[in-house]
Length: 433
Image 1 (cartoon, rainbow, N blue to C red):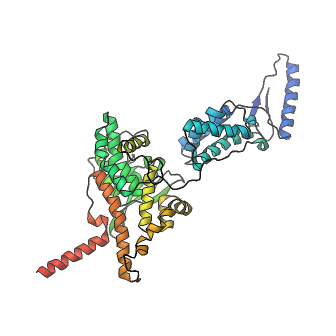
Image 2 (tube, rainbow, N blue to C red; image 1 turned 90 degrees about the horizontal axis):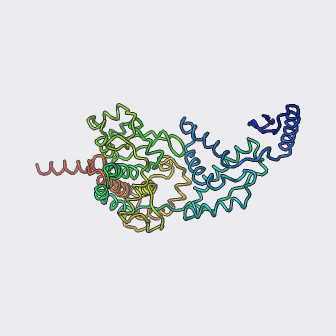
Image 3 (tube, helix red, strand yellow; image 1 turned 90 degrees about the vertical axis):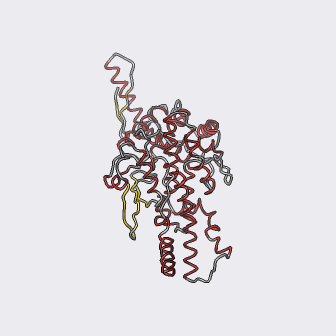
């Protein structure tokens, strides 16, 4: 028998286990009436295992990802379903999953991972689980009334694992040794791009490792002239919250130059021309033109080998995300308004305030220490602004220079200091003549 029930999107198939046509018709009608009654009473029409329902959701998510219509979080849902939900819930009937089953899942997951996942990661798992439950309800395998409740036993996201500038500088200084110790040519190529370009670029822009950085192409980078200076304007096509635009730090010119030289099909074309041509190829490629599966493993290996895996402040393990944290810290110390920083980084003001509130005393350090005049004069204000901006610029620029082994002109580092330097030189020359 093959039947459908009003209000449900799926067709049901069931054997009536007889070769007698008249008897089969009678049994089919009875089964259809029973299923209709069950649905009207708020009970599942048919029981179904979790795994096949989850696989339906997986196929839909993967098709949306392939078509480019999926939300950025879809990849996390696919990972959660494949790595956690199906392995645990796979053989359970969807209408038999109870609160006790969900509690058992939390225990199993903690043992599997070796720790309690963060609240944010658990929210992703819960959202993926509810997608499967939604599918089960729409297909009549479960009713909304009997939907199992999820829970979150993870700690609220707090201060991130971080790098001090000195630690990040030490990590990049270790880079040449890390590259040379690669056992294969490909390993050395991956480590070269990681050390000389990918790592400094994340620290200098705050771009998210993964979807944002790995899908960045040359054609997504524009050059705009602002106050007579060329500025790199990056238009991200994929991100956690969808497409976004941001302005890259001036040091990124050197990083892009490194990647142009590494790229076999671009190393004969000047950087300016590469950007003008809007080349539809990924920025972070190896010297053989290929793209690594991911950058997380080699970066973790670099942290382990250099002894910098653990953050001494938070006692957490560092990751590529720690470079985004470094960028945010530097910009806040530069007194960039929180609203502007949130827009630049593609996040919310609330998230900035939540994760970086510990910087507030440092942001006001000179005022509290009294090392500068607080008379409110324009001269004092200018000195403070130059000190704050130059400290941060020097930090980011020094990292890029270490990684790329290229120096950066003073005019790109600070227009204010360049003008001051030129005026002093002219005054000195005039006085000597």
